Image (cartoon, rainbow, N blue to C red; front, side, top):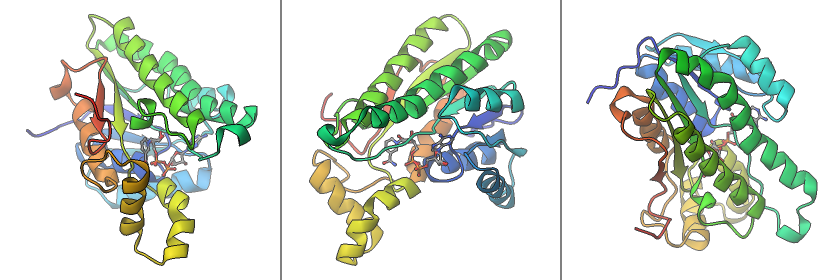
Length: 263
Ligand code: NAD
């Protein structure tokens, strides 16, 4: 199977690093024209330059915008008015016990993880509808099923993503547009590296070993018993973004290493 996305315009939110950057790289290698997004102009431009240098691939553009507000989402849409593939990847996660998580924590996770996906889907789906082709992919999480006790606010936001994606898939019924959620398990992104930094400093162990210990302790149902790589997640996203995945819509597709223990 050769995935060819030549001529497709893709926007990957939050793609200066982590899973988002890996997705941007894979889509670009498959020939798509890719827009890289992050909060700061400088970091976003650097990520776009890095992506170009890692070519060959489609055209690469940089569009900085902070997606934690309605204004930030509107600023991104003003820069990039139309796309064929929208990857709602930007997301934040911060372990805080329920009794310490003030409203601000809940609101911040809701705005970035849920409202940015709502606002961008609302902006880009009509353009896809005119062409009768489109792909919208939400980076949800296994945490949307297995609500993590150390960050209930995060789990709830990811459950909401899965619900929005399912609802939108049905809203787009009978068109060439598919809408799906991808559910990664623990994945060694820069964000997770930061989360594990203290433990790594304390133990002096290599990052992969610290990540595997985290998985065994906090996601003990993991079948692969390690963190996934960002490329392993990007592979699935790239397939779902391709014309080959035209009969998969409204689905929550797992790349969680088997963490979710259901059939
Ligand atoms: P990361 O922290 O490594 O990278 C996050 C990216 O999002 C960065 O490019 C950052 O600049 C961007 N971002 C954050 N806030 C933003 C904002 N307000 N506006 C624009 N961009 C913003 O994260 P990651 O681990 O690669 O996670 C990517 C997605 O995958 C998230 O939605 C996350 O919830 C989900 N996910 C991650 C894991 C994991 O273990 N890494 C597991 C399941 C789901």
